Length: 305
Length: 226
Ligand SMILES: Nc1ncnc2c1ncn2[C@@H]1O[C@H](COP(=O)(O)OP(=O)(O)O)[C@@H](O)[C@H]1O
Ligand SMILES: [Mg+2]
Image (cartoon, rainbow over all chains, first blue to last red):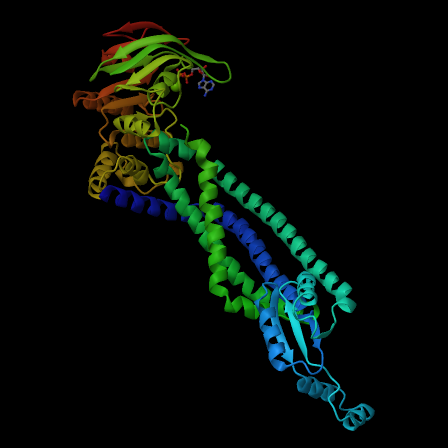
């Protein structure tokens, strides 16, 4: 036990001292790794952006179910509850006849003719409705089928699904394309970035293959040789993730208003600040895994001596 | 304790370095391996520490079949052996002190032992004042002495020296030879590869003579004859 502890201490000390003494090489490796982590950060932010675009699109799509006049409110509320229980349904808002009238008046308050004709009517001409939002727009079809075939079909006066069906489906396709394209781009970029980073580490290790051989020949075990490289790899990851986060501050500070203005209404800089710790941890883990694991894999062949 | 049993070595590029070599070295012996450059001296020594594997035949050191060792056994074997490499093989990013200390770290010595032994052995080879220098700032002779210090520091039971006087002037050469003899007297088996005629003739110990990968002489009180 004491022996293992001593070894660990020596390995750590050697790793740190190698990191410092390999100044130029460490800088180069950290730079490449920083670029890789920037790509990872970029993808992270892109996924936040697309996810919020998607949510926004989904929120714009709803289907209203109009209910026949003189339907009992208790029936409507029961129907609302049943709808909410469906797994496809995200939310159901109840708009009573009175609410509908108030909204209608508000909307047309500048149009005297409409207001006057409303005043002439003794009865509220508007129907109560339930506004349904689906978790995914493509699921409206199922929801509508449920309504049309179920126990509620007699109290339903109208469902505004069919006139909007085309646009709803288009939005559904749009959302799934955004997801697919985003996924493909992420995978491609990630692979490229990882390959570049791993190759850099391979070259770094290659320049040390003679030293690795010498250490083995004077009696070091594989782990005693690997250890300092793992420590160094950890330091590569640690420093790169810090550099990435620090560089991301000005980059996001300046690009965030631009994104907000021309592209999409979300404050990326604020999001970044709010989630700074978790973002940094993700980058740290990715960096350390590439740095340490990459070193271990790259040096395996040189240990066979 | 060291047995070469019908060993042949052909390198990947087709060079035959050793051809059916057999000999035995007993514990505590002092054996010189002589022969012109390129005749296979270093290859024999590399086979002893498992740096190279025999193409045919078997090599036994300290009871281990060297060509068939696990990683752990290799570590055990190399801990027992101190090797002075012909090309020094110092670790370029470690100081003189750290290079020597590394051998002790590898074998799990305590910090206290390291702090005592390293300066002592550096003093022995006359390099204590260069302890904090890096290898690339040293002369050839100084590097050779660091290599010697590194091989000695862990008090190996087998000391393998591949032309350890090659970069030294004659004054230092005799110091090193005296050192090897001393270590041998203290009980270590010493194997010395050299093509230095004066050294061999003065030693008056067992000599194995190589000619193009073959043993042509193995004499108990040998002289340098080619
Ligand atoms: N790694 C190697 N690959 C190919 N040939 C080698 C290698 N090492 C040594 N040789 C060849 O093997 C022969 C013996 O070399 P070596 O054992 O180093 O001789 P010595 O130490 O007596 O000078 C030489 O012809 C040399 O060129
Ligand atoms: Mg040689």
